Image (cartoon, rainbow, N blue to C red; front, side, top):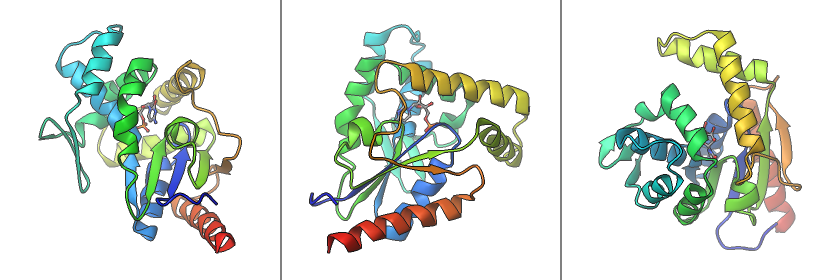
Length: 225
Ligand code: C5P
């Protein structure tokens, strides 16, 4: 176990693997802060859409990321003092986030901002490169995954609950495309760090997955005492 003063649990994995729900539950159980790093990439995408910045203007996107006026207040996510919690979940922002996430300058611009979330008593960080790039010294690294079919089904149910129309076929295609873009990009590609615990949630509920993460973390703490 890392002897650093502020513990970090890094939870990485592909879209719709249940990371968000698991990270939230783990943070709540431990009383830790939570970093939803995907929200930062989604905010950059929304800011770019608002500014009508073309996706291939990499220096422009990096500048936007550097000056991003983002805010997290409770469950609310803000861009320039406007609540955009729901807006950033749109398909346009999901796709945009995956595009801006492939830009090295954007990733560099967001690095310090993400590390600033590491505050007492600890942090649960959810994303794609939390264990590999942002918090390489994390106390615990989890790589959460699930079959693409189960992930598409989960997304389908979420959208249906919100009254948003979608088809499983389209969601499957979209997830496959995003997985490919996240895994094949040269800047911080999605991959488990060698020391990550791989947790396959295909047949697990988010609650059961969170319990496993907590059990591993508490086991590490006890070993360290
Ligand atoms: O986790 P979420 O689905 O909200 O992330 C949206 C997109 O942001 C991902 O598809 C990914 O391309 C990008 N992202 C990233 N690095 C992170 C978190 C998200 O590149 N740490």
